[in-house]
Structure formats: structure tokens, C-alpha cells
Amino acid sequence: MRNRRAEILELAGEPENDNFRSGAIAEELSAAELAKLFGVVERTIHTLATKHVLPRNDAGKFDTRDSIRRYVEFSRKRDSELETAKVRLATEQADKIELQNALARREMLPAADVQREWESVLRDLRASLLAVSSRIGTRLPGLTVHDIAEIDAEIRATLETLAGEDLS
Image 1: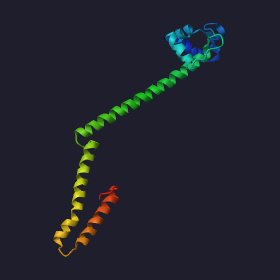
Image 2 (image 1 turned 45 degrees about the vertical axis):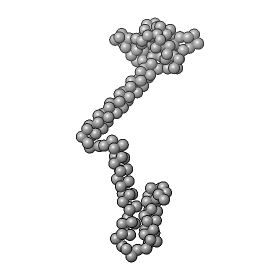
Image 3 (image 1 turned 180 degrees about the vertical axis):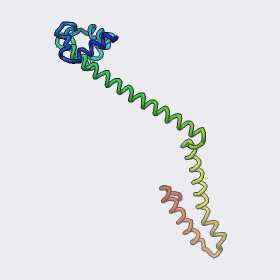
Image 4 (image 1 turned 180 degrees about the horizontal axis):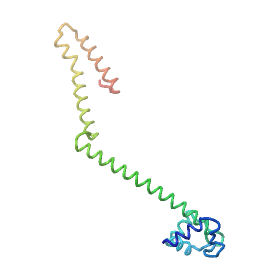
């Protein structure tokens, strides 16, 4: 593994260490040779060629310098994307555990429970408001049936406006 790294570093390094001119590594390599140089299976080279990461020349070979440069770029990008994905996963897992702990401590409640409770409160409020006109009628005997009907109509109109529906 270290020899391969040294070869790659030398190839990407200074011109006076030009192994291409000295004949240490060919300027063009087959998929099998490139796979051996990179320490991967040949199928990986073919996959990268299909994805246009490693372009082939007309003879079906790979330019060694260009392939090394492109493979290093690809590896850096892949490593960066992998690191980003790992951070995102860890954050999501931490958020999930934080939410579960808050639920267990009853610092937060499930939305369905909150909604059910508010619906119950609002149903009771609506029923109480709709009963106001008849309660006023029994407490204030001087009101006419028309007066009580007007109070009832006003309460219903207000509730309809708030609810956005017809309560008649």
C-alpha cells in the first residue's frame, strides 16, 4: 500500500521526479493495471469509466497522470460527502434521542394528544357559548323571544366567523 502511495505522490509531485520519462510507470494503463495501481478491483475502474470519472482514450486505455488526478479528486469528494452524511446521521440520531427524552420527561407531548385536548376544550367552549342566549332568557325575563333570538344569532355568527363554518 505504501509503495502505491509513493508512486502516486511521485507522479503528482515535482517534474524532476518524473517517473513517466524514466519509464517506471507507463503513460497509459489498462483497466487492470490502473486497478492494481489504485489498489481496487478492475470492476471499480470500469464503473468509474462508465461514470466518466476516469475517461478512456480511443484505444480503451487510461492516461495515467489524468487518471491519478481524477481518482484523487473523486476520492476527496466521496470522502467529503461521506463525512457530511455521517454528520447529518449523527445529528438526526441525537435529535431523535433528545425528542424521545423530552417525551419521556413529559416536557413535550405528542401532537395528537395536544390536538385531541384542544378539540375537547373548544367543543366545550362552543357548547357553553351556544347556551348563553337561553341562560340569559331565564335570568332576564323582560327579554322578548326576538331579543333572545338576536343574541343567539350574534353568538352563532361570531362562532361561524371564528370557525369558518356554518353552525345553523
